[in-house]
Image (cartoon, rainbow, N blue to C red; front, side, top):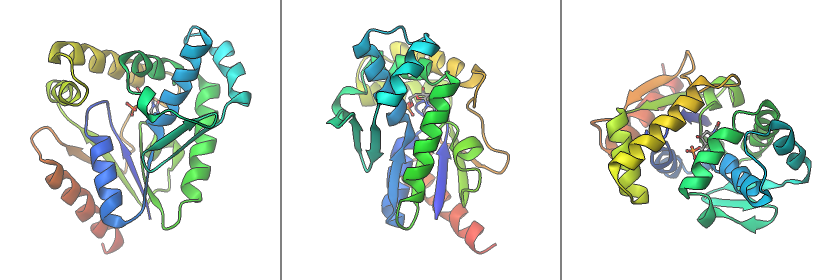
Length: 214
Ligand code: DC
């Protein structure tokens, strides 16, 4: 059973994907963490993240693996290093380069297809590009204010700063040429603005049951 969870920053993807995976006893794969790990490598290499050829040249010597809360970059556990504002901003810039996306999608499909019993996979292009045959596609949304509020509560800092981060990342992720953020035509769209975590998880599980027994 494969569930794709897409949506913008702060829509609740990580929390919901982790909770649904736990309830279904399957793995949780956070594809954003892979873009973040690459962003960390780009920052360390002092390359401008906009330099598509330079970033692409890093890929053959790069190894990124993810699974159940852990992220490794070239064998180093980096989960504690990839949630900074700097890595966050750079992740959405490196994600614009097509060779990066091709490299990521190939690895993401291998991880998912190797996951016993399936997985809940979160990202921006999972339902549209990575796993178009997913058993269920969920697209989470929430008002920009609510998303900024969640970000600020999670990561610290002011809501005004979080609003700027969320809206500039949304603009880049939605407007990019390759695999922009959008809901797949057959996705179940859930607006999480006024819903609790449990309510969203229940809606996803209900949608899953409806898909299995229409
Ligand atoms: O989900 P996240 O906030 O950790 O993702 C960080 C960035 O990575 C996001 O701004 C865009 C990019 N990303 C992507 O382009 N495609 C994905 N499937 C996941 C993330």
